[in-house]
Each structure stands twice: as C-alpha cells, then as structure tokens.
Image 1 (tube, rainbow, N blue to C red):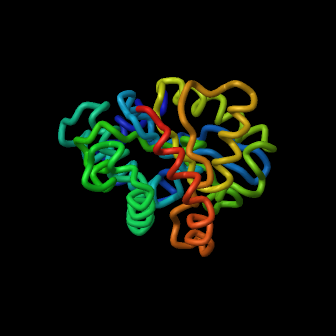
Image 2 (cartoon, one colour; image 1 turned 90 degrees about the horizontal axis):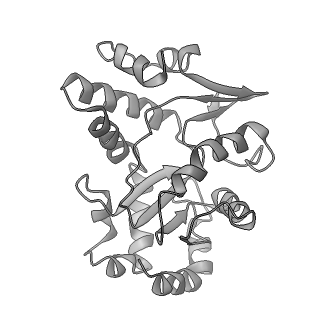
Length: 238
C-alpha cells in the first residue's frame, strides 16, 4: 500500500494527533536525528508563473494537510482537487502569509502580474501561484521542526536525496517562472542547483528573507536586498 492509498484507507478516521501521523506507515526516510514523513503536499500547479519555495512543512502544516485532505475526500472530492485544496489551505498560513504579501507588494510584483495585490495569488481559484518546499515532505530534527540550518541540506545525504527526488523534477515543470526561495537556507539550495546545472530556465529571486515572525532580521534583510529584488522582478519576462 502506497502513501496515497494509506491516506484513502484512513479517510474515515480522526487521525490528526502526532502519534497518528508521525508513524511507521508514513515514514519516508531517516538519518541520525533527521526523519522525513509523508504528508499530502503532492499537488503541482504546472501553469504557475510564480513559485514560492519554503524549506519544509512543519508539524502544523503537516496536521492541517491531513485534516484538509481527509475532509475533502470524505466529501467526495477527487484526489487531485483535495491535494489542490491542501496547498491553498496549508501554504504559508497566518502571519507568515501576511508578511509575505506585504513584502511582495512592496516589490511591486502585483503590477507585473496585473493584480491589485499579491494577496490574490493565494485565492484557491488563482492559477498564477505554485507554493512548495525545498524538502517537499515534513522533516523533523530530534522530533522538532527542521529549520534548514543544522545540518545544511547541502551536507546531508538524506536531505539532498529528497531534493533530487522531489524538488528538481518539480522545478522542471516550470519555464520562465519567477522562483522565490524564502530565506538563506533555501537560497543556498537553489544556488547549488544552478551551479550544478540542475535548474530549468526560470528566474530565481535571491535575497528574499524568510517571512516568519520569528525572523527578527526580516525587515533589515528585506531593505538590504530590496533594490536588487525590484530590479530582478522588473527584468523578469513571464
């Protein structure tokens, strides 16, 4: 039974606690203190003009993804539409999305896309955005959310194998899209992919800070890189 079949089989159950989701049946791989679990983040919007890339879903996103997928499947929604709803509901939710929208609007991305605000990117019926993670499936380090630094994805055989298996093929669905890595750790991943010739023909917006409220240097990083990011967006031809 694969992960999706397992999800279908459990769709009638209330399986939202850590003990229900972080278990052997959903285990993908492990290495030392790192462990990777499946979560239904498989939907790819291949028509997207903008691709926003975080480091990896955390526990909150993992739980929400299962809850959303199971609720949709129990309503009779198709698997593809259920997974699409997962991306809309779970990606960069809460204050992180608020910060992200404010920064993207300040860079003027909405004008390039003929929108009033980049908030419209997150509407479920909007096909301009694809949101994803460098590590598609949730990674935990010593049982806590993996933040992308220790160990670096570039230095972990487990993490890099996940990038090669999932991120590289995913990015190859896009051409002439604007890829926005969130934070230095994701930036480093895309720099390595570019250097090694594993990226498709897309524009990568470097220097964008992670929008988490826990990133106390967010405003300073944004101001430092603002001019170069605005120029990159101006030069991007979707």
